Amino acid sequence: MTKTKNTILAVLLLGALALGVFLVPTIWGKPWKIEHFYGRVFATFALRHPMMLSSMRLLEPVGLRFHNDDLDDMSVAFQELEAEWLEEQLGVLRSYDREGMSDAEGLSYDVLEWFLEDLVEGNRFPLHDYPVNQLGGIQSGLPEFMITTHHLGDARDAKDYIARVAKIGIAIDQVLGGLELREEQGVVPPRFVIEHVLREMRAFVGVAPTEQVLYTHFAEATEEIEGLQASERGELLTRLESRIQGTVYPAYHRLIDYFDRLEGIATTDDGVWKLPAGAEFYAWALAHHTTTDLSAEEIHQLGLYQVGEIQAEMRAILEEQGYEAADLAAAMNALNEEERFLYPDSDEGRERILADYQAMIDEIDAGLEPFFDRRPARGVEVRRVAEFRQATAPGAYYDPPSFDGSRPGVFYVNLRSVKEIPKFGMRTLAYHEAIPGHHFQLALAQEMEGVPFFRRVIPFTAYTEGWALYAERVAAENGFQEDPFDRLGYLTGQIFRAVRLVVDTGIHSKRWSREEAIDYMLANTGMPETDVVTEIERYIVNPGQACAYMVGQLKILSLRREAQERLGPAFDIRQFHNVVLGSGAVPLSLLEELVDRWIEERLAAA
Image 1 (spheres, rainbow, N blue to C red):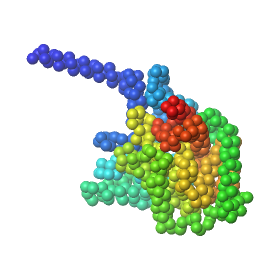
Image 2 (image 1 turned 180 degrees about the horizontal axis):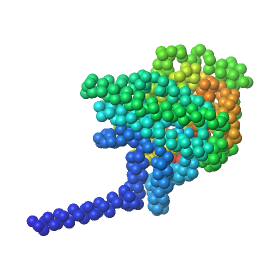
Image 3 (image 1 turned 90 degrees about the vertical axis):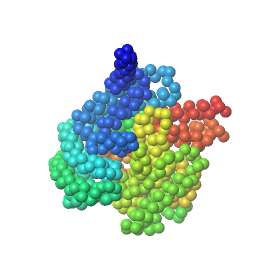
Image 4 (image 1 turned 30 degrees about the horizontal axis):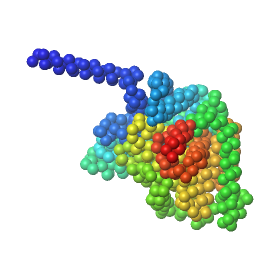
């Protein structure tokens, strides 16, 4: 009996030792296998970002919900720790032997190396941004996260919601500390940004707590929670009202007071050229978003060329339809005002917009078999942008599905003005944001198997936005926009992205003012002025991002042309799309390698 016990004890000790030998490097040192390192990198990053975990809903299906009562750490101290951590992870990654890896293994290595190296390079400019801005700053981002992402399915979710609302004050104070450091270093947002966010924040706190969107959303959502007693719900609503009144509103007033003072020292210089090492920062921002080494001047000239090419085709269509098109902007402005292209400015008209968008998406989804043989398992819905933030939000955007299936892909439409949504421009926007654009790319990436998890979620702007713009072209090329005005809508979307190349580089490299950029976009697109102002102000607070769309699309098109020329009759558009979408988001240089390898394999098999 004693010998048996000793044998069992020895086996247990050896097992514990073996587990320790495996776990210690996996958790703290260099993991034995690079796949374990990939898992550790993602897990460590995700556990530090509870809001990201809530958005993805990876842990909830296995009963883990510890993160749903917390917000991200938004302090500069945490930002500095994360910068150090990223540099350490890049070093560990490079300690593995890249030689001898399979193509699939090497791609994962290359994607993560590019991503980490880019972020480490960006850490040279840790405070070169505006955390409170009219586009998606903390002042609107936190409430929007609570009402669009935080899940309210049971009583625990409801309690977690209130716990998160109670931490909004902490988050705002962390951001305030960073804002003060930025001010000391000369990083102050342009005056128009301050004016926008002050109006937004004053409106946010200008209602009674029980009329505040954080409260009304919770009150409505908790009515649907099965098993939540009326008395318990009443207690929760009382606690939430107290948190809004006692924590959220005072924090917003602290932010308002700070921006009140900041407005007095802000200037009307809009480009990042005004920041310390502004030219170097913008060069990094362009490389970060386009995943290329194109200079600001090269991108500016590319934009001018594309504008001329697209305008020529737009004028031809207008003239064929009986319009005078010498002044393209005037012709498009007149078209935008025609009653036949506008919805009623009413609740009913806005409901029709959402319904028509959904019908367009369903129609193209049913007709894509000749061009795609892989489709996402999850669907996509059309919803309106929350009214409290629609004044400064983009015209449309997309959110991918949650991993647990509780939330579909969502195409958000800004309904602030029906004049910004002429009917002839709706199809191309639906194809960009939903099918076969962002929804196909992001939802299919989530469904990838046999790859490290980070590959399913990693973002590269030129790839994701380039694909969405390319998706518009696929639809236009293949019979989904046969009406000449729908074709004009497609070209309006194309010139919109071409003009972006000119104005983004104009603002941040050539020192154009906000007004100069607005004038250029108005003169060359014919877009409504409210739309143009929103867009130009977006580029000012997010430098370089707008350049990724056209750069990415042109790269995908050039790769397709090369494949068609080299493969001839053997070229299959569905297989090409599988190659482009099949590896998730990648830098454009790696996408080129993937397509080249596919072409070589096809040629070898012929």
